[in-house]
Length: 258
Image 1 (cartoon, rainbow, N blue to C red):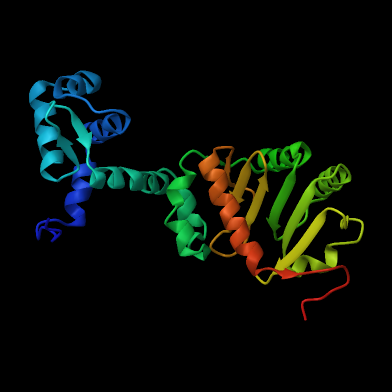
Image 2 (tube, rainbow, N blue to C red):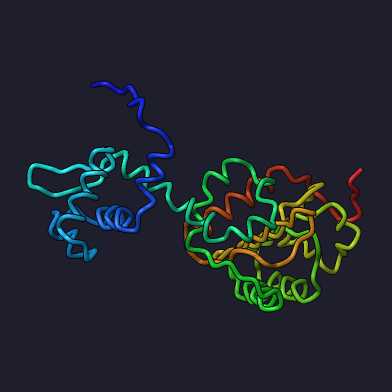
């Protein structure tokens, strides 16, 4: 079997294959099940001529194939192409957010997985988001992990109350916050604290849901960001948290960054 690439293959050609509502509809449909040409046409409300033309193009480019029973299916290559599409969808859907926020401070392995945010909700109402984070803290039963560059009194009170009920709490602070983390806030039996010279915005993870809010390009942060309970999104945020937690330096009361 030959694996040499066709000299006519290029990214522009692949993007053209995907730059069609009907072709993307065919790929989405075939990701669910194999179908004959007539069923594809009926599902997408396409004429027989148009259905054949689109199927022929996708077949020529090896994204789909037709088996001996006459059913069209995604090829292994086609499955891989479709697997990567959510990343472009996330980037396009939230392009104004990415214009203003520093996506490039994230490690490359998380940028490659940016499609994992496809089922998260971008929420822009800051007061509402602050209230939602407080509700997350109050509703957490098992654990609460936070990365922050500022401490809000309302959130602190909620954390302290949950810690009294056995919540396991991890806090990763910007080092400038250390003097403000008092012993009243530090309930030793449930809290682990580390610090970083620079934090990647705001991250909140519980066993139920997650939040990530990237910093603006100038480094300032707010609570505009992605919220969600979707498992794929939550795993992305969890992995991001663990990445930075591993880099954090342990801190105990009265310790300094020196």
